[in-house]
Image (cartoon, rainbow, N blue to C red; front, side):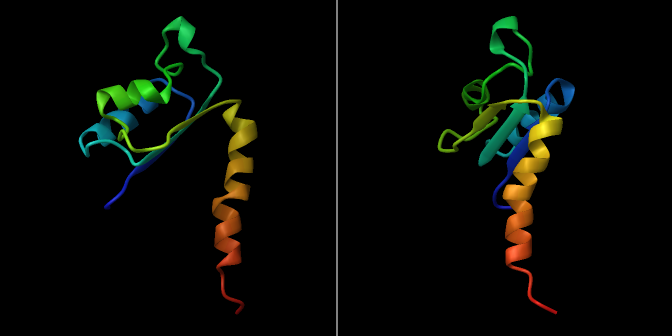
Length: 94
């Protein structure tokens, strides 16, 4: 793929591996983090996207977003408002 992106729900090991995979591609073109972690406790999940930019895991010209919310509540709304809306608006009537 010419572009890569990350939608990361939660944090920890999964976030670490997804970000590192994009490091090998000179960074992701977009990133959305959805979790409830704060950066003050030093957890991986709490790290803001600018930390990943400093390591090269997200490209400097990307516009990453961190949403402080419960992923089980927010992610279905994100899908409904973006991907699903786009899919059904571009679907041809059969």
